[in-house]
Image (cartoon, rainbow, N blue to C red; front, side, top):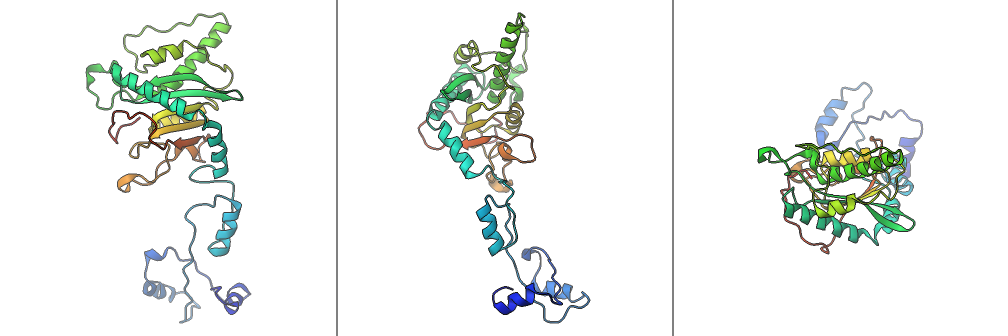
Length: 309
């Protein structure tokens, strides 16, 4: 309607025009639209019909909002990005972890291999580190343990409470509890269970060596602002666990399109858009997440694309 000065004058000045927003053009034909509008009182025979592109998502910057408003439809930038934080935020986070990310991801792969060799679970490993001005330091690590103590081996999925992410976060919690009880002069009593549904005690040599070390920072809430490196994309259960633990950053090695909870990418076979739980603004926490690229890491035994990590 604004292709000419005359058109802009007609459609922006005070006039007798009636503007009706109808809907998406794919929902009806032009003939159907004309027939439906003909029943509106005051509509003349000559209808002015125009299709206006409307952005599907919110603008991710002030510049983009102004550009879309000029070209398409009025939009407002509210400092939100439905698919993740602003690129500048990611850039700063990438600079912080780039020098040591390969080290921690390689350790996660080593944990995965050791856990798989021990037969306690799938080839999935997880490492949690703390970063400060002096660099990064190891806090906890864990392998997947879904097959350890599994009753009669009847479940194809294994125990969901024993995924590597949940085990690693639980070990962080145990270190904090151990420090608190020690500071208050109280003994740390570990229950002697014949069957443990959570399997959050060390089971392999790497886990035992890390578990014996003290937490480098005893203050704060559970995993607040810590970093996690995991060989595979966490499932929805573990992704929500990351949010509840207040994890700061996550780097995962292999995208699991069918069951993963962090990625925002479209799911295969028409399964809809990924959940993108790392940056859902309706939740009360968000974190930074990266998918590992490149072939610098050792290849792990394959897992089913329907596996919940």
